[in-house]
Amino acid sequence: MPLVVALIGVALVFDFLNGLHDSANSIATIVSTRVLSPRYAVLWAAFFNFVAFLVFGLHVAGTVGSGIVAVDVIDDRVIFGALGGAIVWNLVTWRLGIPSSSSHALIGGLLGAGIAKGGLAAVVWGGVGKTVAAIVLSPALGFALALLLVLAVSWGFVRSTPGRVDRVFRVAQFFSASLYSLGHGGNDAQKTMGVIAALLFAHGVEHGGFHVPLWVVLSCQSAMALGTLLGGWRIVHTMGSKITRLTPMQGFCAETGGAVTLFLATLGGIPVSTTHTITGAIIGVGAARRVSAVRWNVAQGIVVAWVVTMPAAALVAATLYWVSGLA
Image (cartoon, rainbow, N blue to C red; front, side, top):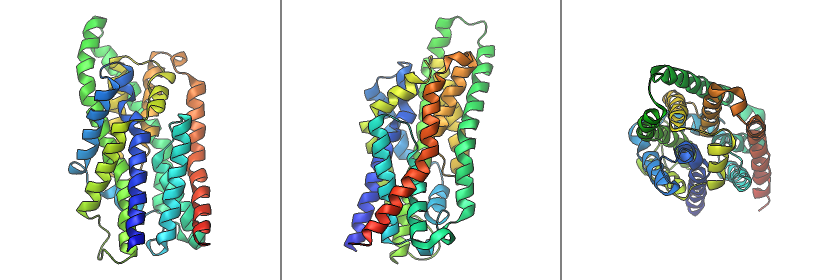
């Protein structure tokens, strides 16, 4: 039992780092447009991160806990390897200021440790397939929705003065940022819930059909909210200014397009990357202005990090699984 408690602690550390690493996804746009200062923006985001469990079901937790690797493969070493691989990759990319995906680091970690134990037979291809598809679809949908919103808003406010547009969307950004933070908390915190629930079932602490106990839900939401409070300022800078410069109207469109994408994925039980989603949306609003407004060299570097994340985390996880067997 002490080992289970220790692994739950490691899982909550990952969830905390997820909030720290991905806080930029929730607040980069509203900070870069100077609608909120960083201090108040993280408080705003952390609150909506925490209350997300009241809005969404736990479909994503079910996918992560039983739809990536077979439940009968999961044991202490697999969980340790998966969390370790995800945490190491998160720390590396956080230190370098690269907005990679904590979600896909965890999925990669589960796959790496699961395959190290049970081979390819351990993989649940249906769950992995929709997760991999979301790597492409979530930023593409965020891009498309944000682009369409910019065009619609530009047409709707064509007779308004720039000052009026700025005032309207400074207020509107409070709502769009809230929706995005809600979607972030709803999708991302559930991934750690799924891992902890799988661990509890593996040890016989929980029985019956796969479910997530309330105390696990509250613990994961709290850990993520706390991480968001501390923020990831290196990544905020990349997301909020290096890709493209944003106005309040553009920030509203990016956050709303990203939020709609996250809501759809969470309700469908698909563990998507909030990083991928908001990056696609930010690129979309930049491209709506003009293609040259997007710093494509920065965006290209981010895409490379996306491609590398799952295999890199999987490799670290498989190594940790092997090393833990030597102890």
